[in-house]
Length: 182
Image 1 (cartoon, rainbow, N blue to C red):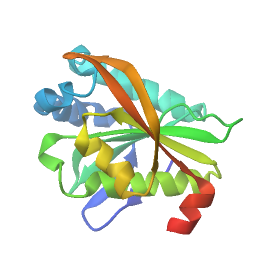
Image 2: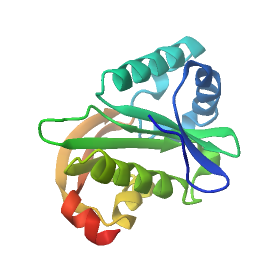
Image 3: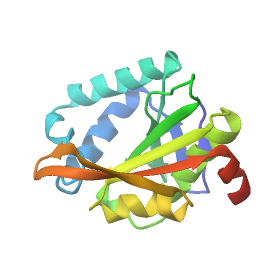
């Protein structure tokens, strides 16, 4: 996997075990805002839970089944972006992401997503990238919309969160469309 500077302040770095502590602290500081949209937050209660997440991400990357990168702002962990399991046969992948609350609203995730979409469709030669997010999560939905993704539909009651079941908006981008938008 790559390390990639998005600008003079923001960098994507592959997750490594030494990132577990800053990742845990970021999760802990952002727990209230993350809990609203991410079902795994309450299961991350100690550093060892984050170490296990990082180990699994490294293993998945080594098996060529996904990539997880830390988003770093001025050498501070700001969030995570990842390719979920890559479907090499169908040449498609889903992207997931989150930012610590103090980093929201600065264009960081749009820039990181643009880089991940470009890498998937142009460098990895995948044909399709998908982003799923809760229909009520306007901040998360704004990213694929800003990048020109097509809203392909809604899956009803797709995920159980702490406050109940939520629908997912499904956004898609295919390689031929991305080439026109670049």
